[in-house]
Image 1: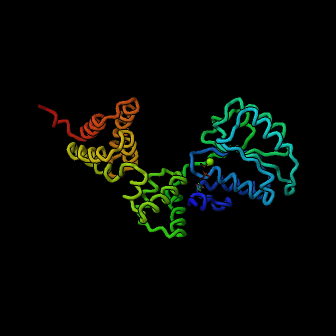
Image 2 (image 1 turned 60 degrees about the vertical axis):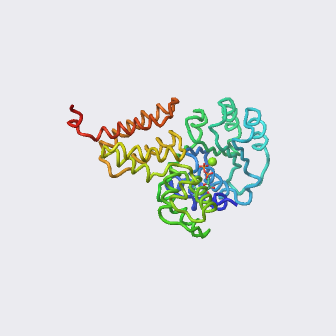
Image 3 (image 1 turned 180 degrees about the vertical axis):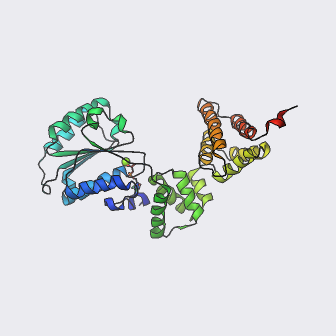
Length: 322
Ligand SMILES: Nc1ncnc2c1ncn2[C@@H]1O[C@H](COP(=O)(O)OP(=O)(O)O)[C@@H](O)[C@H]1O
Ligand SMILES: [Mg+2]
């Protein structure tokens, strides 16, 4: 069984991060006064999990009968919304007093506007017996009339410390051997996405036995930020040979131009050896290179050009006089 499924929180108390928002859900779970809700936010931060926890806490043993779940992989066109939801909403179910049936629509932003219009009418008609819980990445892809009927809860990306806490718990329970750099690498590569962090932990563990930074970056197939840091340090000294050497090292390992430029960006963004002004100038140049690569020029020459510009910024103008 995947760690991700095994360690999926069963109650709201176990969902990490987004404390204030989850407190609101806990209050709803406790007094049962559940509005229609939309939870929005990036992937892998606990949206679907929270909705399941909420529904379980509200309905208890009646969960099975009282919940209809429709995923993006299911057919969710207009007819399905009309028929499936309608017949569920009309079904008689015995629930704890004061509770409502719950319809979960995961990844609701992938529904067509037409299906959303049908959904909106169904919400109006059955709102005395049924509550809707929607999860989505972008709440602005949900049509306005649905948004205005829902309490909108926005989940932020998880903080490093929050991901770390969960990873440590899982390492402990699964007896995963690791070092601190290994966990830091999992956090760096997953960018606040807990699902990815947990999956990568498991892949590294089963692939290598030991969770070290080197193993994690192999599993994730991302350029090692240590190499990129060395590259940036060389640029800051105006040392083009040093920078090109590191660039070629990554290029020869087979990373694409996009992989490399994205890692450069992420390293520079959090590089504390660099004055703020230089950081801004660097990010601007990295942005231009990223754009050219996305336009189709993903060559090592473009990346070399970036190295040259980053080096030049740190050279004194006097040195350019002939
Ligand atoms: N906030 C969180 N706290 C604990 N585990 C989490 C959290 N977010 C995600 N996970 C883990 O990642 C998996 C996927 O989470 P999920 O709720 O499906 O994310 P989302 O719906 O936001 O994409 C869960 O099974 C769980 O193991
Ligand atoms: Mg989800």
